[in-house]
Length: 264
Image (cartoon, rainbow, N blue to C red; front, side, top):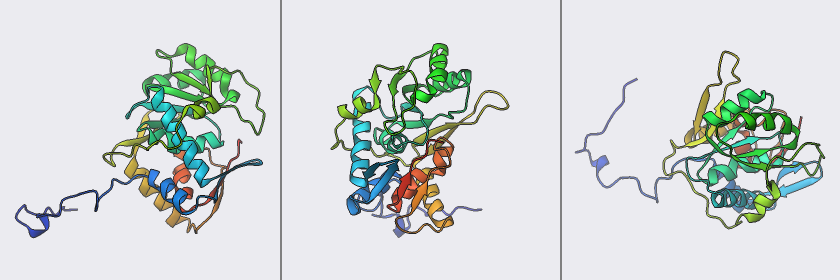
């Protein structure tokens, strides 16, 4: 494949530079903004009897981003999530990048040694964790070289036993956040939105970075390949930690659909 580059003397190179009126870096964060504006009362997330519409999903995501920023998370920082398919995991796919940070969704099936390696290698600044995985996370944190801020995410719908490891719960974290927080969109669509890891079957896990452009385009691809119409209902059987749920947390929001959470 050859690339055509217009010479500087071309009239198409004169006065046609990028500007805010004609160019915005691609990011799936824009999906939630649009849908919350157009369909604010449409059901976005279901977890047992619990419901959240798109206005609430946006508010929760902005609160998460705001609270993370207040706890020192800056653009380019990593925020890890050891969560099953629960509403907080949907929030995280928007709220973490809204703070300019990168979501690192951890494989909940990995052992403590590998989790510790990933937390250190990814330089996680904050860890959101479900009590179900307290045993593994406690052992992992004992092996890490640096300790992230640990936020416990109890499941209020399905009472799951487990030790609380942090000094802060997810509800308390959200309560600190501002629902009117102005999200940080990427200055460049090549900026990272997610960090994933292989399972480490042939050695230490390998880190894989997804950028905002890639997440945006893959989400659009989901919609096209699956012929996803408006207002779909998506049951989460695929773990959201797996390649960020193949970008469906973003794709379903683009179509103003409903994500039905499923712990297992």
